[in-house]
Length: 114
Length: 116
Image (cartoon, rainbow over all chains, first blue to last red; front, side, top):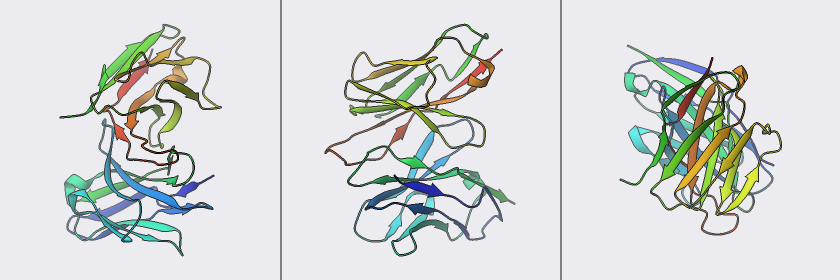
């Protein structure tokens, strides 16, 4: 069975600064990886996903993530954040040859200060 | 636009009074999920339908039931809500094209349940 670790429960950052939200996973097989964003009182929205191919994945709102198989990581980055990026971010993993049910991390709250 | 719709967005019920939350989708996805999300926590999967097949998570209380009368609609019934059931309930869909393949999950906006 797969698992996901988001070590940072909260990441405060100033507007226009770069940010990295960390995600590590554990699985014995090939995986699919996802980052979702959740704004207050809303559902989750897909930011980006890695299924196969290029390890650098670009998503919406200027976010990108890099799949690192050797480090079992899928960290999310943005070079310059905006106030509107303040939200909860969830990393999720599913096994490509196994269950289609993803496992979610606990989430990281990104707080962007002016 | 194709989407996942949840009604109502906010639901207030009394302790022990049955409540039904609804979800509809225009994506024609074959998999539908119900999640419970409490404050500052990850969504917790309650159950899901793969086509018409119902799949219950082992730790989902019997108090929670679900119905999927057709591809587009799915309902969450809470038979006797307790104070601990107050949460955001999220419906999601996905399209599983091949056995073992996982596609993106599309989430509705959620229903926030308050239990008085």
